[in-house]
Image (cartoon, rainbow, N blue to C red):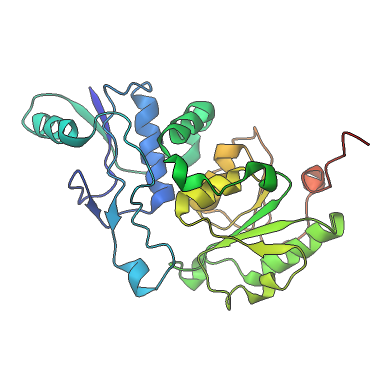
Length: 277
């Protein structure tokens, strides 16, 4: 039995046309990897390379083609093409993974294996600029705008209120802002004390950077959630259209319109004690 994360309907084996974004594709890849028992001889490497016209029309910095982000692990290249042909003509059985399943609930108990898998396939040069020691005392904020219609967006005013309450707890808190929006759209956040916008050059590097922070203020996006999941980072949402990320094993809350920081999260915000003091 082979296990293949088929990331879009038009998957040509070396490139796919359209289909889900990176974060949603990561569910398919992770589910297939776990189902294969982390066995490279049964796992067909996904077709990450993608072409979509949307990012070009919207003039986004990240064109979301995911070229060169990942190394192959499992059956790849010519062997992948031959294996798929063999399956098509009845020479083997294959279980396809082409849906999101139940999101993180399907993989929550396998978090160490999933993290190890993505660590092993990310091209090292893609994340060289991500400095975990610099980020570990930072709060990450992810604001999804670009391809989201207004009804899916979280108001900037909510983020402003949340950050104000964070700085009441820790006035010197460093806050790293990740977003696909323009500086003009994010202006009310960028003028706030301690807020610094960063883009590490591609989607997986930003997800990796979020995973190194101590707390995430998330958008209603699985992009946010993957960053938290890979690093077991506590999460505060305004809303979340998908099931829980952690199933109770880590701090996670959906506040709605409230901007108050729950007391259970205060320890994630207060400054770390100096061990040399």
